[in-house]
Image (cartoon, rainbow over all chains, first blue to last red; front, top):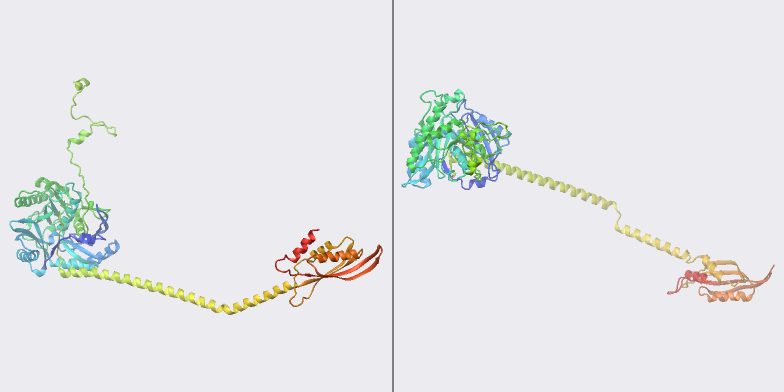
Length: 406
Length: 209
């Protein structure tokens, strides 16, 4: 069965009247539920949010809960926390997908769907009855050809997600790639907060999950490149099950085109080494895209995802890739969020909700400029209300009234 | 950024999910309609009960109240009784005070005349004749001249009619001889149209002296 790439042109306006469908984000160790509504133009209102322990998809940490058990727990949470039950959207972690980029001639959407289907079956070595295949056109056309991102999701994951949603009393209407949902949220946040609108159209996003990092490049507002980078990207300090054993023995086979990086060869204890390897691989991808796009380079790199907790990752990638890099703060998109919404782990759930809501209004955010190290010392020369007199670090030229007059 | 959605949900599962939503909407709509119909039915039933109660009360009031013909007959009887009582009152009642009549007659008597008896009787009127008092005046006069002066004054007075000296006889008294007389006259109670009330005329004549 083929997935569908649909435009959301009129959907937000239609769904704006009430709450968005319940977004279910199947994480590696927990399942997140979120329902947003359109409170005002600057931020989305948060109707309810909850996090249920337990992996929703195969390959997660800990035992896999049964569909009925997880569905019944989800139903209790939905009833107890004030969710408006009805429709639901699901985001599945990137490690469940196989992805690749194919260059194809220009063709209509129907022809492209058929072509992508045969190409994906050939490249991924999957059977059509066991997979759900989706695609999206990348960037613009060049020389009569176009690049298409092909994604394949095992049918078992789709069936499991549908069964859980049904057990929870929800009507499932959409299953998405977690990184693509996160990309939607990051794109909307940048479109709302970036002072320069052009800067919001040209950026790269690194979506970090425990075992797969997804690099997405957005050029002129269009997704132009996406690569999954396998590795052990779990934050330092996680449990041994989640931190080390998860790196191997996954039940889901990685795509042939995925690049194994990190702890496959041995134990990896250095977070810095992991971020360096991820940054170098990201740099290779950026250079590849630079060559194919005629010298384009992202204006900024946003890091997000469940594993994006380490500020050292942003610093490492910024120093290696040479572009401003920062951890995304998706909580700024939500007005009065629930206390459980913390960190970048909720970015996919927010993105899943964003598809049913209209874009945020412009709210440019003036980021404070980084001050030179000597700047605070100079400021301390003045005596503030603290009563502390700072010594002058530099000799001060003697000026007299006569000299000044001369 | 241009929004796009890559959906991996197969058509059959999507329809099933949308069916869940449609069933939920249908259930809510059905519940809403049920509540609406039940509420309307309950309201209609209450209105019917209230109307039936009001109808029962109105029937009870109609059954317990008197008929219109009876009421009219009773009112007619009361009016007849009142008319008869008024007629009796008119028949028995005197339109003037007896003192006024006595004062008027006393006023008309000459100086050497005294009054010993004054009788007012409601005379039986003849059919078609107006009612009148039959006045009998008995007294003493010094002489016939005074008696005739009294008769002339009564006659000259319009309030008295048929003034007649019925008795006139000399009587010896310790002071001398006087004339004992009896004068009868009639005093009509109804005045012709346009004239003042008899009592008022009697009072005016009494007050003019």
